[in-house]
View (cartoon, rainbow, N blue to C red):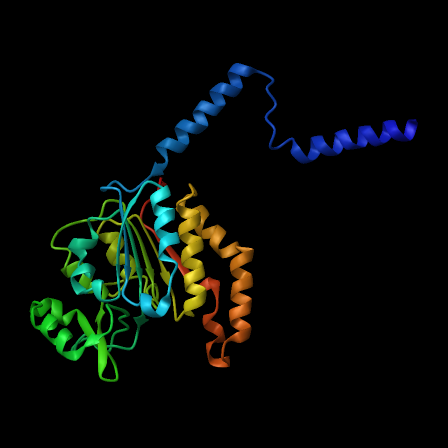
Length: 297
């Protein structure tokens, strides 16, 4: 009988120690209520959300290659209260990449190829200036589109050739030039592209350019990233961020995700030796342009 009583006491003590930090003790009901009100008020005062028109943009110029689960991504944004617009492959043309077009959205997700070895012009090709690709078109189609650009816009683009076909390469300068004076309203920008966060300061930095234009937060990659891993990171990032986590919490959860680490390990083991270092969650970069907590909802 004594053993049973001792066991019961032990269980009670164990339960108290383990759960005392998550079960509030209401010594004074009014005091507890006042403390709870203060916490809610503080969270509200320290919270920033996008302040535009409640739309999310998905630009997927290489969907035929990346094969992202766009319906799932749309559902996440819709459940968070955003109306989504999706443009893929040929519909994600250069006009959809203009800063003035992007500024109409609270969320901008661009999933494409990124490069760092293309010079912007003969006078600027010695600088490290990453670019993101619009999409693969014939030279004739791109030439007609290129001829319609202003001289300043032309100097902010490059040509990424792949055999007979190729694509526009857009620099950070492109988005500043084509913003036409419009600014973002605490927009979240996610460039799911290699090298999109490889430069973090100066006029060739995507993150700095978008934050200077009024975006609240930015995600990208510091180097090459293997597509299956970047797709998994994107889906996890959007799922977590649209579920109510802050920007800081979301980035921490992505980096510590067991599921993503298992995916990373599998991709790493199957990758060629020269590509193994690009199967790494730590290539995922976050930049925030505001001092308080940033949320999508």
